[in-house]
Image (cartoon, rainbow, N blue to C red):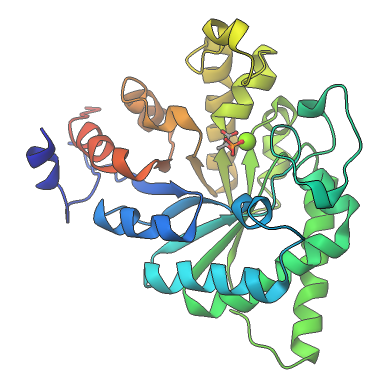
Length: 295
Ligand code: PEP
Ligand code: MG
């Protein structure tokens, strides 16, 4: 089976009726890029930047972050790299952030909420990202969005960072894509409005399942109820795809269920353009797409 999959390297994920799906890889560490290249992914669909913060004793400096992002972009040699900004909080805590105790952290101060609350930290990350943007094809993605206002705040901070860098004569790419994760029911319900603000959507089915079904993704007592194939979740995904299509932006899935090959045909049918999975699942998924015939 592994030998058979190896033969798919160098081919594309195109269905029998000619629909091409971009198959990217998820990584959590710059070292993982080697696995991405070995498995011939089209790019990186989700680089979880949390490792930088979780493996450090204090908040990582702009320079440290810049070097990590630059390394990944250079190694990917022009293939798209989607880096997700800080997604701490809930199950991912760091002592130096000194976040308050919360009774319900999954619904608490996490991800983009921390970034918009502690803008100094966010600006450091944005500066590192923009500085790295000249070394490859960068896209930046923001987690846990629930409103248009959050997206506008983010965009205005990016404009500020751009103008600061310009004043300091520091280079950044003239254009890079900005996207948001669709992983809350709120973002699905207003996806028509959000689609007008960004270049792409990436659906985080892990959190979207958790918040749609009210099933804690970390709670083993109810793991049987955690079902990313639940019709409510699938309708959420379909609604998001429709909004993206209407606004003319692309839409992908980067949660675990992107790799569920029993759903691949459904995803292609509803117009999902990209799937991002763990590097070792890339070729298996490419094979699944190549077997689909929608005619
Ligand atoms: C998700 O929620 O589906 C996702 C991809 O992000 P994470 O698993 O890092 O929360
Ligand atoms: Mg998530």
